[in-house]
Structure formats: C-alpha cells, structure tokens
Length: 124
Image (cartoon, rainbow, N blue to C red; front, side):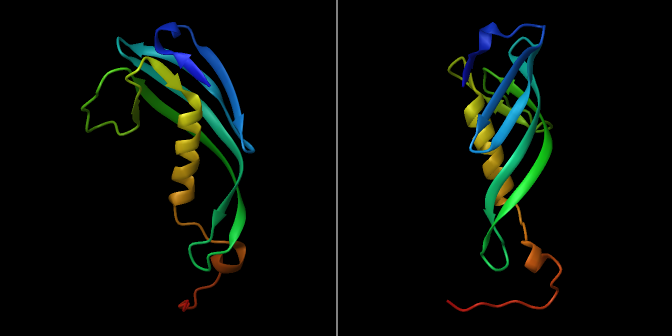
C-alpha cells in the first residue's frame, strides 16, 4: 500500500493494512514542511523463534506506533523514529514489515523457557 506524500495534508488521513495476520491501523497527518506524523496501532500474531531453545511459537502483540516520516534526508540524532521516503511515496507495507522484523529481532522466550533459570547449552 503506497500513499503519495503530497496527498497528506493537515487533516488526518486514515489507513488500514493487514498482511500475514498482522494489522496496522492508524492515520497520517502533516506535521511540518517535509514531515508527516504516523500514529497507528499494530496488532496480530506472528511466528518467532525462542532465543533459548530455537523453537518457533506464536507471539501475540498489540503495540502503539508513532513515527515521523520525511521526504528529505534528516540528520536528527534526537529523534531516531524517522523513516525517509525520498521517492515521494509512503510505503505502508514497508513500515509494517520492518516493524514486524524489529519485533522478531528482540529477545523472546517461549512459555517453556520463560520461567527456566537453569543454564542452557545446546550442541549441534
């Protein structure tokens, strides 16, 4: 799902995207000359791997998402939640997939390993 950057004004533009059992629902609104504010909620279930035993399990989440979107290169070290779309189109699918991958890269434990404090070593 792509939205033209120039089509977003000061009034909110709602969007809704669902991919692979994960929903991103929210709105875009202009917040500066070359900046937009994305306010959304991401929820669903995705498969992730336990960082301890390596087993896949369903991970359920419901997280708010607030991002700044720019159509220019931004060199702001204070705000790390900026996504740059330099071609004039905002790719909502890209945002959703990158946020899912960020969740998958965090340390997560399955139910079996979450309460286990024993040292763990596995040989392959």
